[in-house]
Structures are given as C-alpha cells and as structure tokens.
Amino acid sequence: MRQVVSDSRGHIFLTGFMGAGKTTVGRVLAERLGWDFLDLDRFIEGRVGCGIPEIFATQGEGAFRDAESQALHALSGDPPRVVATGGGIVGREENRRRMRELGRVVFLDLPWAELLPRLQSEGGRPLATGEGGWETVRQRWEARLPLYREAELRIACAGLTPAEIAHRIILALHPGGDHP
Image (cartoon, rainbow, N blue to C red):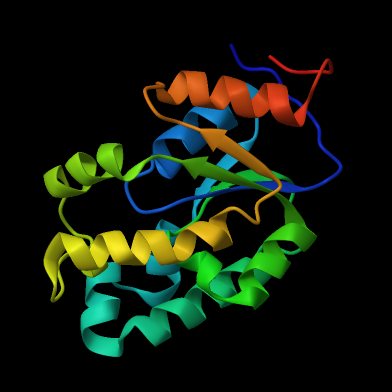
C-alpha cells in the first residue's frame, strides 16, 4: 500500500554497518511513505562516473568519504526522501551533523552474528576484502557502533524482515499519526 506521508523534518537517513539492509529497507520504507528513494552510494557512483570499488582502488577511501560529504550537501533543498547511506558515513562529524540538519537519522542495528553471514555471501565491498580478514571488519563495526548510536532512532533489526523494519520505522517516526 502506497500512501504519501509528509514530514516537515526532511529526509530519513538510514545508517548502519554494511550488510545491515539499508538499501532494501529503504526501498520498502520509501514505497510505503510514497517518497522517493535514494541510495547514496549509487548517487555517488553516478556523480563520479565509476563504481565504489574502483573509487577505493584508484582514489582511496578518503576520496570516497569526500564524495559522501559532497553528496549530502547536494541534498539540501530537495523534497523529503528516504536515503540509504554508506556504512562509513558516520565517521565524519560533519556528515552526522549534516544528516541531522537535513532530516531524521535512523540506525539499523544488526548484531555481528547476523551481519557476518550477509557480508560473507556478498561481494563488491572494498572494506570487507582488506588485510586482517573478518576480524578487522568486526573491529571496524565495533568502532562505528557509538557513532551509529547517535542517531535519533535505533531499530533493533535482528530476525526482522525488511517490511517489518520499515513498519517499525514508520510507527516510531509517526506515532499515532498519519502513516500507512
């Protein structure tokens, strides 16, 4: 069911570690709200003209993080949308602040025990293939947790489907109000 829901607070930014389901949940949430959906990683790829693994390989992580910050600034003045962010966007204070200025920030909280199998089955994640293997990836996840927890809303996602997660977000952001 698609129903347009207005929100004077702007965009809804979905944050969380890689593999948390931000893109999948974001599409479901946008459909239910009647909003546009934006995958920030795909937006960056379109602006830069190449894929994220290639950006990391040829320009480095710093260049990609700069592109994330620029992409957030490009959203100013846009109508509200659901935005799936990259897992590392929270690493810069300016990005966390900008997301709060532009809308509402939701942390999709998935425990490591559920993240690891997802990450192992997916490819194309530059930070999941470096030195140190999965232990290094787990350490990165642990280091980012306090930053993710700065979000306005935390959704515990363990064992939930994307539709259930989207429903919980809608209820939390629009309590007793206008929602599908």
